[in-house]
Amino acid sequence: FVCLRCPYLENTYFWYFSRACAMATGGQVGSNLLRRKADRILEIGLESEELRSALLFLDGFYGDNTLAARRELRSSLEQQTVEKYKEIYESLRSAAEATEVAVKEAECIVTEALDVITCLNSSVDITSDVISTTAELRSKAIHFEQELAATQAFIEEHSLSSREKATLSRGAVDGAFFEALSRVRAISERCRGLLRTSHSQLSMEILEEMEKYEERAYSQVMEWIRQECQILDSDAPTTSSTMRKAVSFLRENGPLFRSCFQDVAETRELVVHAAFMEALQVGGTRRPIELHSHDPPRYVGDMLAWIHQTIASEKDFLHTLFGDVTEAEKAAAKDVDELVGTVFRSCCRPLFERVQQVLSDQLDISGSFQLRNMIKFYDGIIRSIVDGDTTVSSTLITLREASISRFSSLMESFVERITLYPPSVPADLSPSSSFEHAMDVIEQLSKSAEESMLPTETADDVAEVTRSIVAAVEKAIDSSISGLSESESTLYRLNCFSSFQARMEKLSPCHHEVDRLEKDVTLLQDLIVSIEVKAVFRRAGFSEHLEVEIDKPATVEVKIRRVYNTWLFLFLILFILCSPL
Image 1 (tube, rainbow, N blue to C red):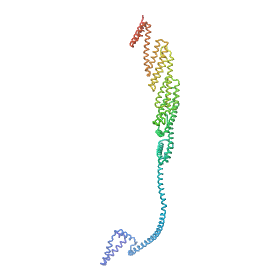
Image 2: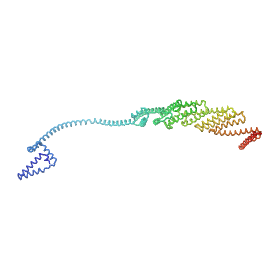
Image 3: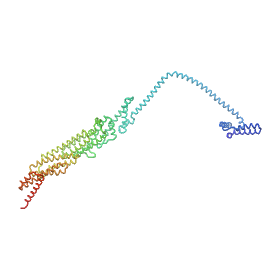
């Protein structure tokens, strides 16, 4: 295989092989030698990599495969070997010279190193102090670096970010504002706990800074609450979650919470007073209240209804805003009911003046009675909403007493006028106009009692008033019939009482007086019948016998029988008188 790849070896091989064959034909001795050489050549193994590499090298050693080249192969190889040795020698000589130079330089370096070692050994004592100082300073530097890192971490943890500072300084009270304020308070609490540690000075500085932020934030919250209270509608003020959260933040600061109580009350006082004057003079969804000043019950009723509705709204608003005030807070701040009284403090004066003006005008008994019932009703219902000694309560009590006094004075003058100035008896013995007017007054009072918002209590008052009027009418009747006969006076009294009974039967508050009048009317009917029967029989000549019978005491059945007999005799006499002779 190698021979086939190498033309030079191929030719050499075949040359040696032909020569061996020729020599074999020349002689027997030569043939043995040649056979051994041929066998040795044939025994050469071509599987070795080194042999194959050498043969491939020899293939490219010569350019031409000639006989002269093959003959000079050995000398050529030896010559090339010598040249290679020369090259190696030259290389080794230059390396030896470089090695000598390096050895000399190394000797110089060693000498200088020995000098340096000597110097270092001499400076060990001097540098040991420097090394120890350097190590100490390095440990201190590490400690200071750790303290600086801890201080920076403490400052970052106990300081506000730029965003939180901007949120607190911009003045808008919202969720982000309260989150920043909560962080300020948390930092303040942690710094107070660190005042007795090694961070006391830094904690004090941070605490002072946080207190400044907290004070400024509380001022912003107070101002925001005041502005919100100014813009809330007086008809139905509502609280937002942000507003309630702001008050809850102020609750933890006692002085600011008390100040918030007072500021909210004063702000709402101005708003409610302006709304009340607007409702009186300008109106809104409804017509102005003062347009009905010609109708006292409606005028006063509209004012009290507005006060009642607004007090209920303000009470709900303040109770929702401040919540249930604890006992400690009650001692330090006003109660919610007292706040409501403060809110309506400015409305009491215009209300009192206008109601007093109405009460001092020319009111009739019915109008005064309506005003009294109305003021009494609103006084009770408003005092049930606002409990305590407030300006509103005292004003309503004063107005209630004034209305009661006004009604009592009108009733007294009315009853006195009926009693002192009795009317003259009409010719037909019918009830006089003054008595009819008294009955009109009773009907108007009964109607007012039925329409009143306190029907039971008002009905009792009407019954009492009715008794006093009827008693005055009875006295006036007694004074009016002084110049009449017994029959005329009894008949006049009967007509008046019958008229009162007929009109009172329709009035539910007067049922007790109706029963009494019914009994009086029955007695008067018996009396007038007895009088007329006496008169008739007296003219007929039977007076003596009749007087004895009539004057005897008898039971009810006997009285009925007597009346029946009397009427029977009367008809008999009339029949005799009217029959033709």
